Length: 66
Image (spheres, one colour):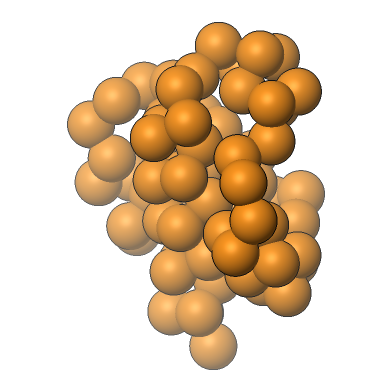
């Protein structure tokens, strides 16, 4: 989770770690192509931008692990 650990915003980092641990790269890729999940945004108290950054970072870390 090297890229996730570089995130500065605490909420974004926490959600990115959750995404990395819970979702497969395929699921994250599909999520990144759609609109931010309103339920997750409300639950984690994050903005659409934070959601998008977290999903993209979690996906990048999955890809980096090969």
